[in-house]
Length: 284
Picture 1 (tube, rainbow, N blue to C red):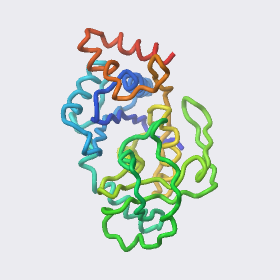
Picture 2 (cartoon, helix red, strand yellow):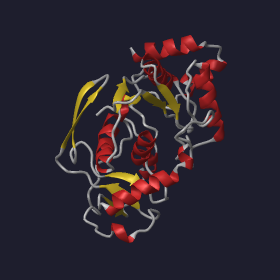
Picture 3 (cartoon, rainbow, N blue to C red):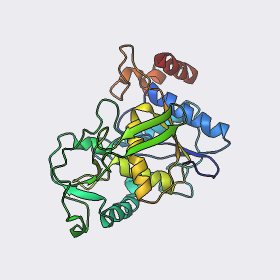
């Protein structure tokens, strides 16, 4: 599954809030793994969520990562050969993938309402993962009648019963069953925004990422994405899923934990070393 190419890793923060100590730990691991491989680290601004992304968070995430001592060679602030490095500027890449999936009859339009469908644009986690779909629109055969994706949700038709295996560089062998552990998932939202699962596959392939380092809450996303890599005829990277950092009550950290945001800790006088140390202590 790995590419026989020089190491290329990535940082992929979303500007929907201030980064917290969990992010600090994951991004530090990504940075260290890229350095150990004498490789290249890329920063990609995952700002597809137009309602929640804010310029102040974009500015803060770059400042906070630099403050931690993390450096990257390509990104929205430094450029590089695979620009643009902001997802909001990469729509044509996502449309090309959507058209290929449509033409292969691997996706279908879905008009079912989902009150939480907005989550499809963001990276899911262990508490708000996309639920199993009922399959109500699964047998629709009119996908090719749509010249553009807007107006309906688009779901990927998973191969029910297929066992998907992969080896995680940190957590070891992984085994998931399509249709049981996850169902037909959204690749494009009716408000004309590509979903997280499609966007990251397209971008990681285009930017020649050889290893993805992210939190263990995205293990199920990896399985979905491996299906997309396969049907889009793209080479997947290796995956390294970090253990999650949780608060004192054992709850996974999220951007709502403002007291544990890197920005709040900086303003309280903590050093980068103390922030990184606290992320390890919380993990334990």
